[in-house]
Image (cartoon, rainbow, N blue to C red; front, side):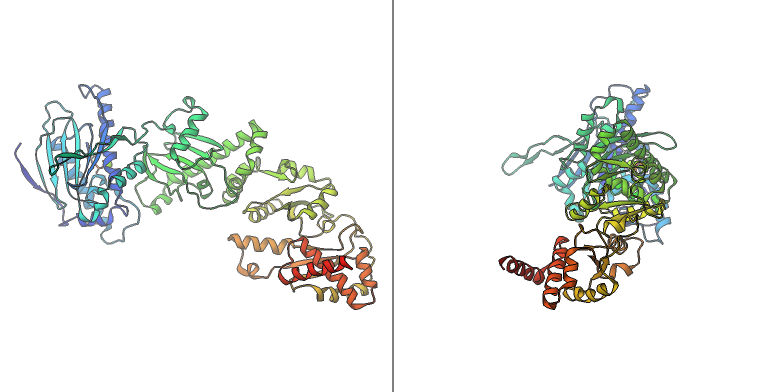
Length: 627
Ligand code: ADP
Ligand code: MG
C-alpha cells in the first residue's frame, strides 16, 4: 500500500478545537475512553475466537499503558482484534467524523452541558485530541494476511494513513501530548487515573514506565515497573452462590481502601429485566449525622468506572449506602439532566429501593435479635428513606423500630399495643413519651418510669421531621418530649389535684418569682402537682421546640418559628411545702431569697443557669450552709 493522504468531509474547517473545549468537561476522560476501546477490542477477539472465526492462539492479552516523559507520549497498547486500513478509515475516520459533525450541528448554537456527550455520538476515540496534538495508530488486524497499518493525525481534519510495521496482532495508540496537557505525563497522574477508571476492567492492564537509555552517561535511568492495575473479576460480576461473607467484606475494602470499618451487611443486585443491572450495595455503620459521605456509591458501565456522584440516579436516601452499581443500560455518558428524565433511570431507582426494603425486611424477619443489634446504625437510613419515599415508608413501617430507655425494641404496632392501656389521654389519644438525651433529661425520665410509663429514645438528627411524619400518618398518636411538660400534664388522666394555693395567693406570688428569674424567656405557670414532685421545674413546650428543630434542619417550615426566641415554662408546684413556706413568709427579702434559690436549682437541673447567675448561686449556697 502506498502512502495516501485524505481529507475528512466535514463543513467545519477544524473540529478539534471544538472537541477539545466541549466534548468533556473533564479532560482526564481520554484515558478511560482509550483503555475501554482496548478492552472492547480484546473482548471482541475472544468472542471471535470462541466462534472459531479468529484462528490461532489468543495468548496473553494484557493491555499495556506507559508514559514516556522525555518523548512526551502516552502509549496504550492492546493485543485485541486490531484494524485494517479499511477499518481505520471506516471506524475511526468516517463514523467518528460523522459523529463529530452531528455533534457540532447539534451543539454549535447551544451552551454545552457540563456533562459528557461522547457515548452518544461515538466519539470516544477523539477524546484523545483533548490532550494530544498528534495521535498515531499502529495496528495489525487478527485477519489472515492482514497488513500492518499506521495512521497519524495532527489535530486537523487531515490525516495520513500508510503501511505500518507492527508485527504483533493488536492496536497501539500513541498520544503526543500537547503543551497545555503535560500534567498527564506524570507517572503518578496516569497511575491514579487508571486506578480510578480501570480498577475493575475485565482485561488485565499493566502500567509501567518505559526503559530509557541515557546517552550521556550510557545507562538506563528508569527501571520498568510492571504493575497490574485491575481486578478483572470483581465480586459484583460473580454469582452470589460463589461468594462467601468474607469475599464481600474483602471487596468492600478493595472499593474503599482507606475505610477500616466493616459494613453491616450487603445486597447483591442482579437484574436482567426490564433492564440490565448488577451490583453490590453495602450498609455502612452510619454515624448519627447526615454528613456528606466520603466513600460513595460508584457507578460503572460494563466495569468501566463512570462516576461516584450518583445523585439523580439513585434516590437521595440511598446515597447513604456504599458499593457499586453497574449497568450498560444507563446512558452513562450523557448529561445529568438527560439522566434524570430517562425512563430506565427512574425504573432503576424504584427497583433498588424495593431491593433494599426486601433485604431489610428479610433481616428483620429472619433474625430479629441480630437486626435489633444493628438498629442504631441503620436508624438514620431508614428514617431518611421513610421521609423521602412514600413507597419505602409503607414497606419500612413493618420493620422500623423504636427503642426505649431500657434498650428494648418495638415496632410501631407493638408500641401502640403496649401503650394503649396506660398511656392514653382523656380524649383517647396515644401519647408516646420520648427523650433525646436521657442523661440531661434524667429527672423527667425517672418520674415517667416511676409511673410505669415507657420512654422512647429518639435522638437522630431527623427526629423532629420523623415525628411530624408519624403524627401526620397516625392521627390518633401524639409524641411528647419528656421535658415538654410535667408528666401529669403530658398524660392527663384524672382531673388535677386540688391546689393548696388560692387564686389570689398565686397572683401575688407570680410577680415575685418573675422578679428573681434571670430573663424573660421563662413563663411562670402554677400546677397542682403531688407534694412529692419538685417545687419548681423547667419545661420546654413541645410545639415551639419542635418547630424550631425542624426549621434548623431545613424543609417545610417558614422562618417564623425559627426566629422566635427560645421559650421555657417555669412550673411552680402549688402543693409543695416550700412554695407554701414562701407564700407565708412575711419578710419580703427572705421570701425572695427562698424563691431565688428554688428557681436557680430548677434552672441548674436543666443546665440553664449560666455566667454571673451561676457564680452568685454558688456563693449564696455556700453562705447558706455556712450559716
Ligand atoms: P465506540 O467505542 O463508542 O464505538 P470510539 O470512538 O471509541 O467509539 O471508537 C470507534 C471505533 O473504532 C470502535 O467502535 C472500534 O471499531 C474502533 N476502535 C477504536 N479503538 C480500537 C482498538 N484499540 N482496537 C480495535 N478497534 C478500535
Ligand atoms: Mg469507545
